[in-house]
Image (cartoon, rainbow over all chains, first blue to last red):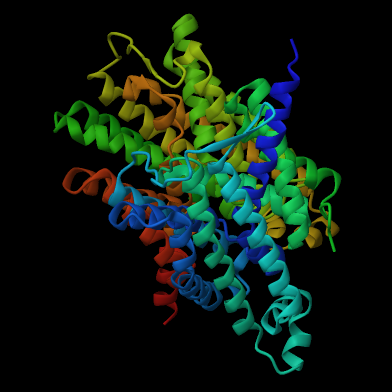
Amino acid sequence: MFSWDLLANAVVAGLLLGGFYAAVSLGISLIFGLLDIANIAQPAFVILGSYSAYAMNDAYGLDPILTGILFTPAFYVLGALVYRVYYGSFERRGDESLRGLVFFFGVLFIIEVSLSLKYGVDYRLVQTGYLGKSIDLGGVGIAFRYLVPCGVGVAMTAALYLFLGRTFYGRAIMAVSQDQAALRLMGADPVQIKTIAFGVGIAASSLAGALLISIAPVIPSTDRDYIGRMFAITVLGGMGSIGGTLVAAVILGVVESLMATFFGPSWSLAVSFGILLMALAVRPAGLFGR
Amino acid sequence: MRRTGLVLLVGLAVVGAGIVLATVRVNPYFYFAGYVILQYVVIATAWNILGGYAGYVNFGTPAFFALGAYTAVVLIQWVRAPLPVLLLAGGLVSALLGLGIGYLTLRLRGVFFSIATLALSIVLQTMIMNWDYVGGSRGLSVLRPSGPPFGNYVVFLFTVMVALAVAAVTVARFIERSWIGRGLAALRDNEEAAECMGVPTLRLKLFATTVSGFLLGVAGAPFPYYVTFVEPNSAFAIDYAVNALAMPMIGGTTSWIGPVIGAVLLGTAQQLATVTISSEMNLFIVGVVLVAFVVLAPEGILGLVRKLRGL
């Protein structure tokens, strides 16, 4: 028997999941969508954010989302450093396609193994007062552990949208994604702007990681589940379109949630792969492509 | 052609030495570790046919390797097929997957191809975990056949792997020296330009993905008999993905000898580190060495050697 209740619950859960997926994908949308840097280590930085939230929560009982915000400067510096190495070793030599990809795969691997050396491969979670609660809206249950990350994700999307559209550095990032040579002629240094953009993208993963560990327990290899999702969302959203990222994230969230409800949770991972293939085959420019 | 004959002789000598080694009594651990290193020679060589020659970075090595291993598991469960049949079947099934991946290259290039291969590995692992016939996520014990042709069974498997490694390297060397290798190099440098010059890029890519898949499957087929307990997490381990990439990168991707150098050096180092430190620490070392090499010595050990000779 088909149950409308089940469907309504699945759709609501998917919408909430979508808001969270947007938070996870903003960084890669900026780095891959706008700067065209295939940073497949991005999900590893998100997991690093999860573990810093875990460490602060475990040691001082700090709220994970507060930790996520507090750690953004550290992640920004880390991102800027990684980009400098990447630029010096690959981009400047015009060697980014093959070896740059391998470089980021190595970074992903190092972060993952370092985390399992430090924390082991047991599932880790955070303790807070509000994450266990939920509200009931006429048969549809809304858990706070999904509602809060969704709200923060939408807020992050809005903040990044405003940053790129309204501030000097944000506009400079948009400019560098369109025409580097023109930017150089205007007297700005593209490498410096890209360093800032890459740093912002990694900084976003600090907060995204905190949201991730608020939703579900995390192990070091959780990052692999998110590589497909992130790139599927970025491509479907239209490479670097911030609004598109949110829409694509919500679509992926709802489809995954429906798959998990009606076919079993183990198939939800195949969804992002299917969406990525379909997007590339049917409309490579994405929904909101430039 | 005289050099080809020479290489053939060297290959036969390596196989012969392997058999002699198998009959001399040494510490049994030697064969156990040697098997893993030789398996990596096959994997690294297979990866390099696609990654090094054609420039398509495959992150899905575990998918092909595990498909070979699980094909063998099915055949063992079903008819207790002999080892040569397992090798051939494992190779053929993985070659089919390789052919499929080859058609993907029509749409997916660069990073998208790499992500698709990674996703493929995750999806395939999910499917195996839900398939009870091959043990599902709990895994499955495999009984080795009694009475290997010589020595004990690990020694026998070691000798088989010596032969497979020599065969894989010979195939890679043949591809590299033939017009196929030159065609692949052309499409690696610029696919559009190669196509315009009349290089049959699609056929070459399909060839490279199929051969690479076949060799990876063959490397995985004896795996059930080697470990005697197969479970998805060890068959689909990310170690295979990172090693398959790191070994050719460290050795040098442009020549058949590069992956061999990388596999022997890194494989031996890992075996020593596993015994003396810990298995997670050895993965950490692989990651650091990989990043250090792509940043500091992008042409690998072969590139360093060439530079030294040039001075």
